[in-house]
Length: 60
Image 1: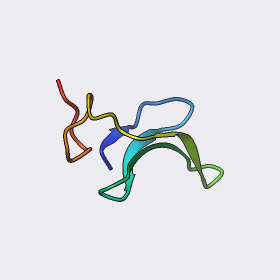
Image 2: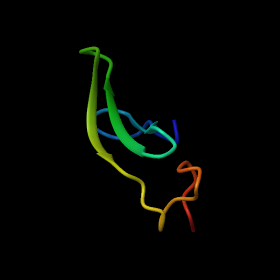
Image 3: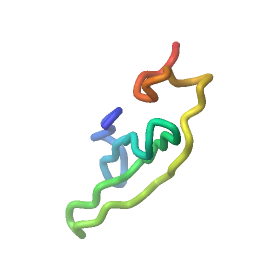
C-alpha cells in the first residue's frame, strides 16, 4: 500500500502498487465492508515525472 484514504466516500480507499519492476501499476481500490466488495476505482502506469524510481514516493 502506498497511500491510505480512510475518509474517502462512499467507501474508504487506498492506492496500491502492483505489476512488476519493469511494468509498475498503480491501482486505487475502495473497500465496501458491508457488501464484502473490493471496487477498482482506477488503474494507471505511474508517470516518471510524478513518481520516484521506487514508484511509491511522489516527487515534489
